[in-house]
Each structure stands twice: as structure tokens, then as C-alpha cells.
Image 1: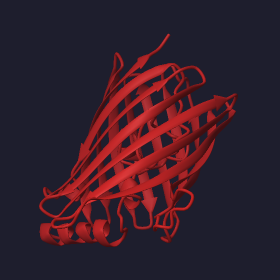
Image 2: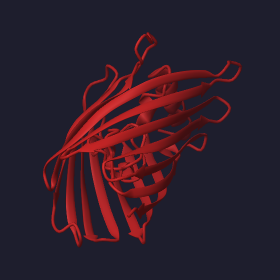
Image 3: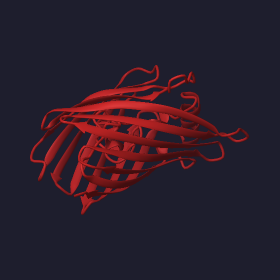
Length: 275
């Protein structure tokens, strides 16, 4: 598939598959999700990210992240994200921003606030989002949605979760592309020195078929984590790594789509523990 064909296909996906496109555009891409293809979104593998479980509490932490990618390597399409979170022992909140731009054709910005609270082994979260879309020659359009989710830790190294996103507000009859996702995360090894993390999710957007998302992360040393992911249908594969040092994190991932080709995703983050 050449560059122009991929560009046309990408535009069709964004503009035709979802109107407005904000729900479909919440494909998980930040941090570890770049290499997991979204596996772990049900249990909030990242604290701050669009399209994941809003029950993403990280007790006593403060963090900032920035992410960027060009879908399928097409220069005319750009996606950037930023997020910030502040959590105390039992409650906190995250704020996220995402911008998608197709040169001279389309622009979209999303804003999200996601508070969460912890009740023993159960985390509950809520997210309110607003999306602004712009087409040449047309006025800006705003869309609003909500999301709800939970994450439950029945054992020290096991987490189960699920969420629903893209839900309309009461009395709002406009179309929504609902996202449903549920799954689990199981970890092994010593979390202070080395760990293996298996994530398995089932995800559905709108009326499309359910997708299976799976990933395996290996941490041979506390400063480095490598992740590989698979998703079907359609077939996708990914590889990536994250390097952490003194609270700073650098992530780099490569995704392969059966029909559209490769996407490189880059991100930086900083997390600081609170007293």
C-alpha cells in the first residue's frame, strides 16, 4: 500500500467510520499502550491516557506526560497528547488533552478530566470529556461524553477491570460511538527487581466486532521494561520499550497494522512520589 493510498484510507477511517470521530480516535497510544496495542486499558496500565479505564488511581503520586505519533508514518496526519495527574492516598484526578490534525482537511482537540477514588481493593473512576472538531469552511463543533470504570485487586499480583466510554449525557440524543472494554492483568516476579506482566483485554467500539488485545511486558531491571502486543481483528503486532530513571521515563514503540503498515510512537513522562 503506497503513501497516497494509506493517506486516503486513514482519512476514511477518521472521517467516515465515526462522525464525530472522537470515540474512535480514543485508541490507546500513550506510554505503555503504544507497545501493548491497548491491552491493559481495562485496568488502567497508565495513570493518564485517553480511551482507558478512568479508575486509574496511583496513590501519593504526581505526574506529567507528553506523547506524539504520525499514524502509519503519514506526514499529513499528526496526533499529540499531554496529561497530568495528582493523587493522594485514596483519591485523585487526571487531566488529559489530545489533538489530531490532517493537514488542510481536519482538526480535532479533546479535553478530559478523570477523578478516581479507592475503597479497599476497589478503585472507581469517572471521566468527562469535550471534543472540538473543525472542517474547512464549517464552524467548530463540540461534542461531550462521559465514561465510568472500575478496577478490582482480588490478589496482590492480579487486577481485573472494565469500563464504558463515549456515553451520552442524560437528555443528549446525539450519536455516540460507545467503547466497552474488560480484561485482566497478572504479574509475576519480584516487583522491586524484575517482573513479568501479562495483560488480556476485550474491546468493542460502536457496533464493530469485539477485538482481542494481549501483551506481555518484561522488566529485567527496574530501569527498563520491554513490551510486545498482539490484536485481532484485524491483525496487529507491536514492540516497544520504556526506560525510567529518577522519575523520568522515555518510551518508544513500533506498531504494525496488517493493511496500513507501521506507526512509530514516542513519549516522555515524569512521575514524582508524594509524602
